[in-house]
Length: 233
Image (cartoon, rainbow, N blue to C red; front, side, top):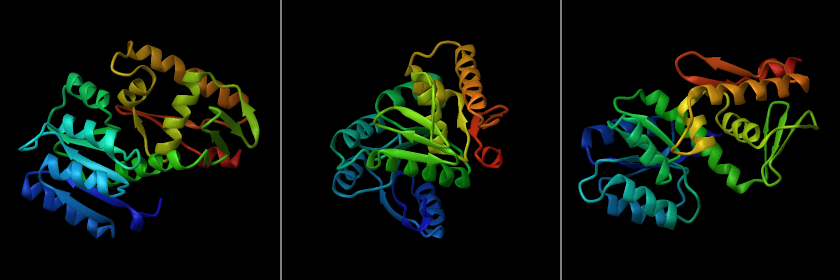
């Protein structure tokens, strides 16, 4: 993903926070628009083609969830929405994902992490314009929901393909356990052992195909798809 071509809509009513975000992203040579109200955010997002929308939940005129729902329904393409909020309870995050949010970042946050998440979301958004994704030796055929390793089919389960797609879209960044669980089970995930079982099965399938140890555990966070080691196998 070419950083200089990212176009971001920043939806934030707090002027100081909005200026900090805009200044930082423009320092990366990204193009940014700013909306301080939900109504303006919906208007801009439905007229312009953004790579990512950064959406604060606490807006003066509309609830951020309502804004997210409207953007997802009316935007010219499926633009990724990253919610920014101080609400960190699981129930709040679940409501956000249920309304169409693609990622969730709680305040306060590191602006560098915000930029990394924007890149990952923008890369994921490009998947809607393409029929396949290549990550190192892996090729993911999106329409067919199949994966290849160096051209050879990988016998993945449906859950395994979803996990690999999520990890591949974010690579080389990590994906949180909560995001992976939401990808598989939505707002009603089972206990964390179920995710561990699916990750274990996916690792075994990759290793049997000769892909090596591609899925790396990141303590206190989640997992990362590491292709450098696999490229050397």
